[in-house]
View (cartoon, rainbow over the protein chains, first blue to last red):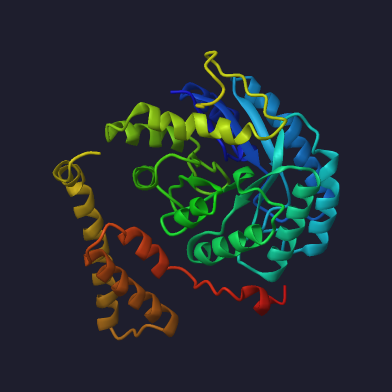
Length: 277
Length: 86
């Protein structure tokens, strides 16, 4: 089954991973800007990173027939440095017109601090100013519930934010309902250690349905598995779920959500319709 | 959706193994306690959380995972903006 991974950090993956993903059905991906495994020391470090996201990775992906899109920001983990964050936010417009940029992300909270919230709100202003879609990172483990609620408060307090253009990622059993109920898209991140397993993601699809629901692998520097979406597809098949339900979550929904960005020029491999409408 | 009996049959060995891991871990903690080591406050709190989690697992309802997640979560306070002066 062709699928799109809407949240995968390919800068931390080898070229062999691209080859494996292509062989397992990955035809498209979006890569949010995130923490690089270390705190960067200057705005130029981010400028080089954004060059990697907008120029290097699309070429690497294209070698394997995978279409690569990206999102720009300074992530929540480094947002504790407000001064650097403001410099990075001021620099982002240099890259915002690059052809594979879908929006601002992954912005959010990490430890739910005042500095993180301040930088999050300034990212929202940037997204609004440039009419960009937004991809949200929610915290992990004990901080997830509180942080997700805080993020939803900030988003819902701003009438200029259209929830249908915002994807809230890393939802789990205790946060998914509120994200969907408030009209946002929700992303389940499949991860071996924290976050969610393919089995539990399949449970959430059974419980909440497929509307505005996505699945991703993260595929980051941590103990992650870039082929986690094929694992979800396999689990759904094992449960004898309708193939069209699985296809909606792993292929049609990403296309539908990303299509709200003017830079999303996805070409289906088999000439099939762009979305499941 | 598959029948409950089918899910149970397919999952039985996996659940059995996970429960054994939990039981063996608690045994390990207790054996260490018998050797005279008492838990510091933070660890004691974690131990109590595990007991509360086991009670949730034993309870009825199809929302055990959600309740476990909330048990292991920091609390949300709606006045967080005022607290942060933001």
